Length: 366
Image (cartoon, rainbow, N blue to C red; front, side, top):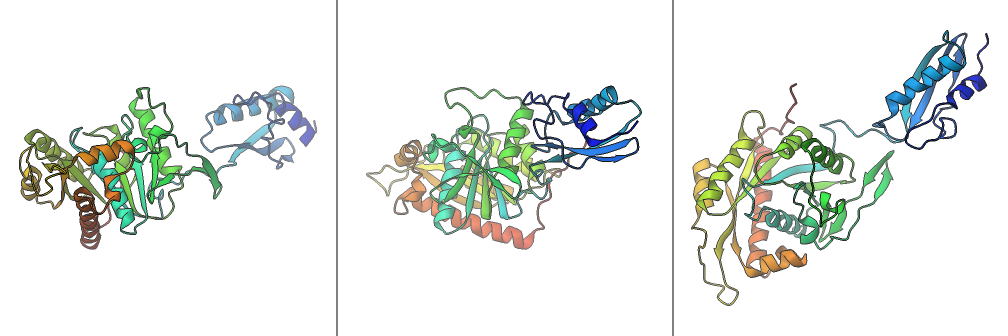
């Protein structure tokens, strides 16, 4: 029996690709590298992505079709290629990002996302290249805070890969799961789905060159935190708390989560949010609604820097809801507080990088 390419192609034309329903020849999935040596045949099948879910089954079906339609004696060797380059492996994901900063809080409702948004804007105002990932998968708030709720990021073919292009606003590159889900529907995802979505927003996006890449984490501790420390080498963490005793207890747990032996992410410092209330008409007055300097005392006790104290002013909420972060206004009390916070963060990151080795990614042990 003599094998020839046309015979092989006719056999492969009986195999359908489940993604489109087209056969392998119609779908142009058979590379033009069919080699025949006696009863041995080798060729490549081309898939759109290296992660194609049908890859294994299609390769098996192609082999079976050759055995069925030509002969069981044929030795078949099939390799796979993909049109799109694979996502870089963990550890090489963001080569142009200098510092990755996690913004965390032990509990919800302490203004962590407000701090993340305004810190990002303030760093951009200081002239740095800034990216912000809304990693709060179950309660994404950045699209509203930046007034980009209607934005729909598109993808661009860059270096052989289709990459999501972040939305840019106020000098900040921004991505959020909120861009891809219905804002009126609750996001009900299992941990694995949420983690995979997050990995895509990190590894399959065109973040480019950044001085600071901020991660707005969900409150508490969860699978998401674990995914991030296993995906990125986090330069340092910022923990946000109010001065209240109950919030401080949770902030203490948040600090311990990052500093334990397995995770080992340095704490850049604490931010005391809602430190006091200042009425707009009485800018000199301070009312300590949630207690006085609780986070300052905790910072001293835990031997971590206090990066800033952010007062409550009505305009913070109003500006957040309008999508114009208060840090845009340098002349306001709170705008000043966030610029000071950004300067403190830059200082602490520089100290951390000078005095400590780079953070290593947490490895999975099965």
